[in-house]
Length: 578
Image 1: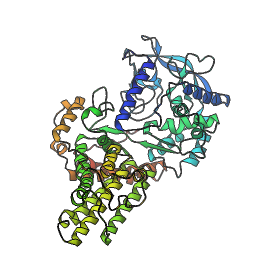
Image 2 (image 1 turned 90 degrees about the horizontal axis):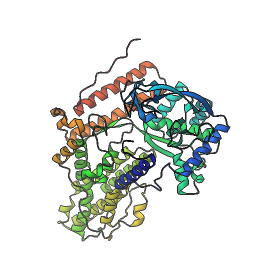
Image 3 (image 1 turned 90 degrees about the vertical axis):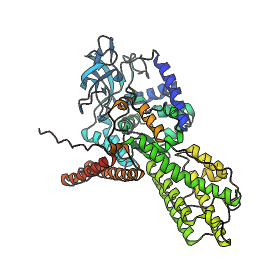
Image 4 (image 1 turned 60 degrees about the vertical axis):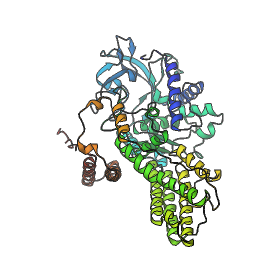
């Protein structure tokens, strides 16, 4: 309505915008689909009909908010009010973005129509419900077989357990709208399916549009491992509503094996807000002058695994200049330059000493750890293994000083060759490890080193020589550029919205050193681990004294982290007496 477009035109417009953003970031898909297709209607209606005939759909009259001025029932996004659970003042008609709880619009306090800002009234309308209580036993049996031994993240497990602990309730699956997947039932011709009933079915229909062999993936639970990635607020729909839908449909659908849910990413000292111009959004990143691979690196480095994290311009500058420029880029560039400068562009002969073999063992251990972390979908931690290997490489070069040895006698020159050969092979290994994180940088390194295609496709589990003696490399050039303070400050102001006009920050926040940043990261990791301990204890309903002791440790760690970041320390709010 704001843009003066039809729903179909909006879908067409933003599908193209999103595809362009993903293309710029180097994110690839077998197919990037959508749910506005005949296949989506066909598969959704089939699942619904199967649920209906098996007695898992209820009819009931629902009280809804209706705006008399606009003469319409208000869809979830058309109403805004105060969350009845946490008091957040901008809660939507279906879910609160702050506490994550699902809401019925009539539960909102002080509701407003977002179109005309008038106060809506409550009116009745007949709707269809998914009978979750009748499906609860099937869901629990499935979860009992699936979750133990899987890689469901702790927050996903906790969210689903919380829903089951409170007891499932029938969930409305229709809406009074014209746009959406039609409901194939007499008396409901003017309604469509609720988006979170049929959106997850979109995974199936998009595959069906891609290949007529779609059932090999979506109706083959014995042979398919399904991973799903999301922010934690989408866990109930993927881990509960969709599984209940297809369990009730009884059509041998593949169910999710691993739910990988992140916490929230904040912006500087607050939250992202498109309306207030605070934060960098997908379509803005390419206008910052910072390459896509740098964004990929930093966003994965601070990926909110285990607890909320925050994007910080200062920290982006530090990580680019220290981890990428001075650590990773410096090592790979030096390794290639030594080959070019001292050995005519050809990898020299290598005669490994016990010290070299120790380095091979260190690198192999870190490589195996990288594999293990990625298998467990600990994406952020696996990235640190790459940086650790390049640090080993820099230390190895510094200790052995090939630029000096090349000027010495035969033994020294042979040692310079071994060190250079080892270093350039470590660089080749790093190029393959970097592929999922920084694909463009990875490809650039492989071109500079003329890495054989076979070596680019497979990542070994131990450090092996992929560039043998005599292999000729290409032209070597720097991989990264330094980010300057004034460049970053300009971007901070540009994307700061109202924050940019605020009072200056205290000196403690202004100056973050590289050493301080390392300390902050250590504390952040400790807070994450302790947060998981507390979450698991609460989920297991452990002894209150034990929980209290671990919570106290968590609060102390958070206090240390706040001090390290120069942020004000929040005083814990006590519970109100009943």
